[in-house]
Amino acid sequence: MSSSMVKILIAMLLVTLSFQASGQFLEWCIADEQTPDDDLQRAMDWACHVGGANCSNIQVNHPCYLPNTMKDHASYVFNNYYQKFKHKGGSCYFNSAAITSDLDPSHGSCKFEYIP
Image (cartoon, rainbow, N blue to C red; front, side, top):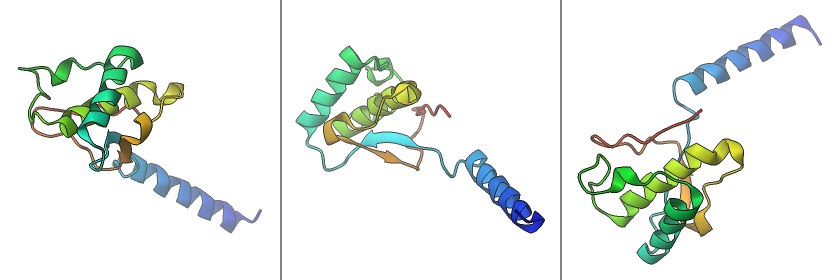
């Protein structure tokens, strides 16, 4: 391999790492807007009671209770599960109720966790 190819590969690697460090390749798991509320509720119930997600922040008087919508609560729960278990084989599938997003869904006092 020529030295110019090595230099190009190193430059590409550095650019990739700098994009990742600046948040360009971060990924969150959120509720799919097209999913009916009853499907979101079933997926949330599984994530909270069986899957191991921490659902305490969507309870009344906690940081992610408002807005009090099924989509917002499901997004918080799905992301909590996904961040916690993605390195152990967990996915953002939830029976087609969720999708990944590169946009941070945090809002107000509700901070969505991201685990690299």
